[in-house]
Image: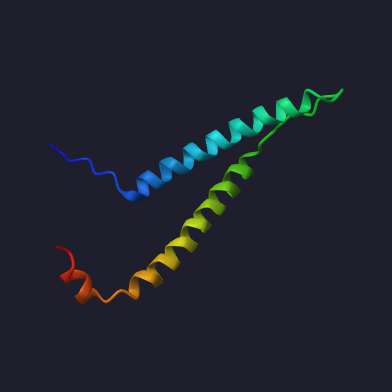
Length: 86
């Protein structure tokens, strides 16, 4: 049998896709509610490029946080950290 392993990267991708989908849906619903008060109608259209930009900005945010975390983790003395595992 093969063992299926879900990595942190897979979970991050799934959460990012879920966030984009929910964000687009919520924005379209809020847009409809806002436009009900106006006499005319302006349609809400979210281009594919917008999804790519959102993904890029989220990825950039993760990378920035990862850099800060690695810098913080490097400051921890490993000999002391390994002794305190118990």
